[in-house]
Length: 448
Image 1 (cartoon, helix red, strand yellow):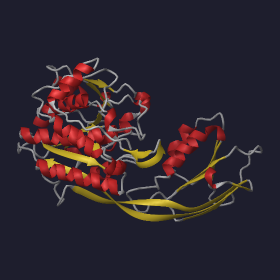
Image 2 (cartoon, helix red, strand yellow; image 1 turned 135 degrees about the vertical axis):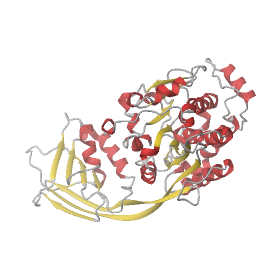
Image 3 (cartoon, rainbow, N blue to C red; image 1 turned 60 degrees about the horizontal axis):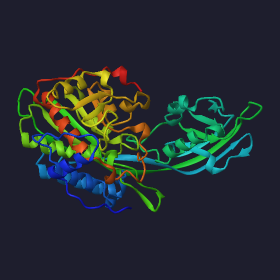
Image 4 (cartoon, helix red, strand yellow; image 1 turned 180 degrees about the horizontal axis):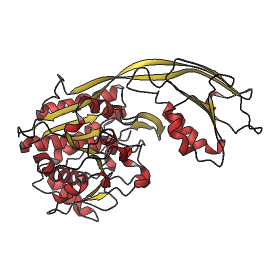
């Protein structure tokens, strides 16, 4: 890993950096968000000794313990029902132990067959009753339209994908390599077998499948801290500030570097959660109860936010500020960020109303084709009707550091990042005080 040059963030350095940039970034002197906290937390989470913060791995545990110590330093309360800041829960992981596939009496090489299953044993043939469905994805077909059924099958499937779609096949393999992690022990009763092969010229498909999987239990943990509401009439209402602290861990090496530090994804958002917890603790005037949570396992299926959502009454959550990848300037320039699902509630409009006296702007998500609203931890609570949105600055279509070993602190714009966090804190004032309440999200609008 490349060694980071030591530097100290201060308001004086911020001024120096802003002069060196083509466009200036304004951080209000009265913002209350501590630049030193932003720098320290970000650098700690994205350090090599965190080993990429993979869920269920020692680096992920180390990151969770660091964040718990931060919440303890800030003197947050624990979530009711917990005795510590760590919200520990089990997850179950199925791994393929053996897989043998033949199609039209031809054995398929192991690198061209994928099993997605939570069942301990499979033994299929084309002569079974009821019949296993065969899905043929030909060279002219769009494989994306079948991905949901392949990854989360609603019937047993044998899928033949033409080699022209080899890139899609590799993405499915990457998903399968996560090990089929899930929150329920039993898992899906249906399975998919995906084979990279042309469809038989005759159109008739015969097959035999034999497979075994093993099951292991993992201990995962969110990190949760609470600032109880000061207004007895509003204290039962909750506002959630969240980010995910997990990343990819150790991946294929590039130029000798194999640690995916995830500085932007999402050490930046998790840093914002810590900085905002410190900010609101110092203000000490929140009418509503504030819940600060660093989620685990976002990268492998959003399991942390799924578990968290089941521990709270969603009807009492008035808003969720999910913060994801705020380490670089947005396409709109400095002092801007975008909000996913902007049209699904008036959350963004309310936030912007509290920033009228500042140069900061929240914009609607400019990358609708990326489905970002459904790709982060906000989606779980949004499906329950909570006005849960993600705030980001990432130019994801052109971000070449995303999910790579080069997503490091050196690539972060810390001045702009602090301005974004400060704007979130100021924009949340009305919701935190109980003077603003965003409209609920229609559950059917999140049915994806």
